[in-house]
Length: 96
Image (cartoon, rainbow, N blue to C red):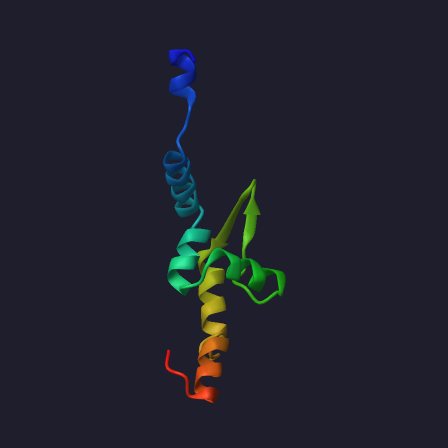
């Protein structure tokens, strides 16, 4: 591998940092942001999106972004809706 090829290689961390910076410029959250804010995993977000119940998102190239204002609206619309596991615990008396 030549020095030029080595210089052209971009690490996953650099790509992630660039995507995050671009998301901020577009006033959007990344998938990682949403998983951290909601306490859910990527798989859960996929299931919610496929069921039409997830936060509004937009695909930009191969990157899924969540516009901040739309995400806030989704949060506000879901305030008071218990998490399915929380509801199950409340019905069964199981501890969290």
